[in-house]
Amino acid sequence: MRSSVAPVRVGLVCPYSLTLPGGVQGQVLGLARVLRGMGHEARVLAPCDGPPPDAFVTPLGNSIPFAANGSVAPLAPDLSAALRTITALRDEDFDVLHLHEPFAPGPTHYAVIMKTAPLVGTFHAAGVSAAYRLAGWLLGRIANRLDARCVVSEDARRLAEWGLGGEYQMLFNGIEIDRFAKAEPWPTAGPTIFFLGRHEQRKGLAVLLEAMRHLPGDVRLWAGGDGPETDALQAQAGDDPRIEWLGRIGDDERSRRLRGADVYCAPSLGGESFGVVLLEAMAARTPIVASDLPGYRNVARPDQDALLVEPGDAAALAAAIERVLVSPSLAEELATSGEARATEFSMEHLAERYLEIYADVITQNA
Image (spheres, rainbow, N blue to C red):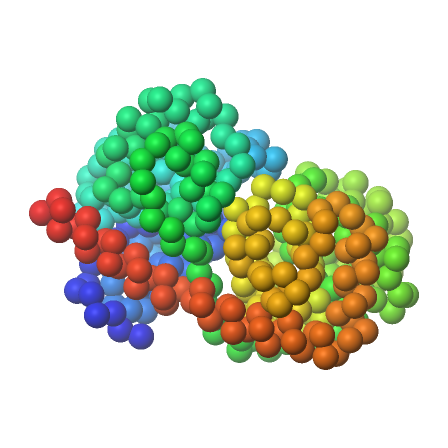
């Protein structure tokens, strides 16, 4: 797909390590791939704890884990990352810089301060922010260096407006539809649930493990990801042979397991601003059972695209999963509606929207 906008040289700056899984990282890499496919020169600047995941990535050093929003963020606020960022921004001569989470400590914050090109900032976080609470007055002044501000959800808008002030355009996250719709399904050995996420309290895997006790003996669970609670979660599961612990998996395996599973389950307890993984499951035509969170409702319409249940209620989660597994007609209705819903969030459409914003800020700074 070629773009109708004149070619631009865009630098997408991500504060989080690209060699660790995460929603923001996935958005940055996916957007870069699509922009390049449209004929634009897109490069990603980000920390990498190992080899960069693609040739268009400029690595900015290793990350350091920081606790944030009930999770752990792999950031690079150190001096070596700062020097690499400064060098890359001066050498690359970008037409526009697209900063994801502009005030996360590290490369995006440095890029705001330097401002070597017109700046577009996208805010992903929802919930609470200690940085905004402690230094919002200062960050709000620095935020005026951004030429355009975008948010991925209403929750993200509320946080950004509270912490920084200013006006924001809503651009929901996107997915690369074909990566999931055309994947070869991973083989299963019975009715199979797929969970993928960091093993930490807010992702709710402990609730899903409890729900497994209420489900029939032939139901299996693929538990993807890892994290600080992996050992405790495996101890909770005991020797249950129905549960397969996958650890971290690559993009191809992720797509194939989404296509192969009978249910994708997202039992998060909170802190989700936008359910990208739900969109991926929809594109793969996999029925979804998830927690009823505002961030997930941005994507999944209750009882139309997914069954949503009270967060933390293992019995309700199990009942919803079993409804899908025992009713092929319900599963088909959810899959068909979800597939149509996913097309509304294609990365190609999102890229076109961003290209319009890039063109506007470049013109403003000419």
